[in-house]
Length: 310
Image (tube, rainbow, N blue to C red):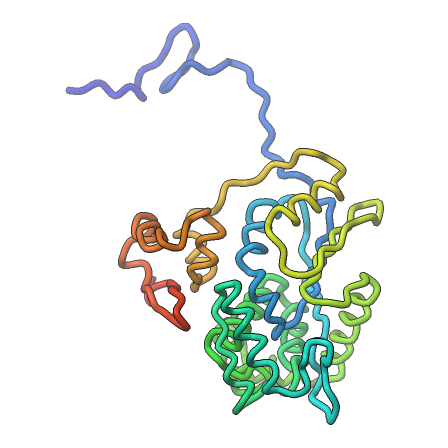
């Protein structure tokens, strides 16, 4: 019968199993105190916010023990009027957005269709923003999931997320009552909540999206505007913590991340795990069982989805 080393006991150390460790050790199971408030000022139809998703996910996964996240709606598009909405960027009407979105998608490789701006344009980003606020009152984490699903719908899958039926379907898939939530989003209370976010964004000095504002206990902080590389956010966090060293957690295992997110685009996997685009298929096959996921393609980009029933 083979020896089982884990059953061996050392008379000198008093250890059964693997020995060789000091008898008295100091350990700390406490997570770092979350002394930083991170405000993410954004909008459901902000294309550069969609492009930021891979970097922001890695930042929060690896450094989230240091800060608490507060998502703030910024109000990108109230409505289309007779005049130009954003003349500085050549946005005079809905059709002008399509080319801008397509350019962002091509540059960042977070897929964006954008053809809805020609035939079924989003008339306002306020309806999904109000739905977000209603859900946020109940569950901050679930509100973040709603925002993600809304962005998948409008950017990659070309759905009009200002449309009530689309919003109801997204909310239903979260396990909530879509009709009820979307109905509540038309209430005066929901309008008030959204206006409070606009006021908060203004007080934070956020005039463009995305804006990340990190504030410490002394009410001092940093503001990072636009989609930036991971190093910008890490550097900003160090600055508000007034330290030169912070500890990054290991990246989450891909099976757990896919279970959590349900859908991941190639770019998101590349950024999270420092994988080259050409190596994505091999990496995914190594990390996941073929029964756990399906590989699909949209707009020239690969993405994986959690297999139904998993």
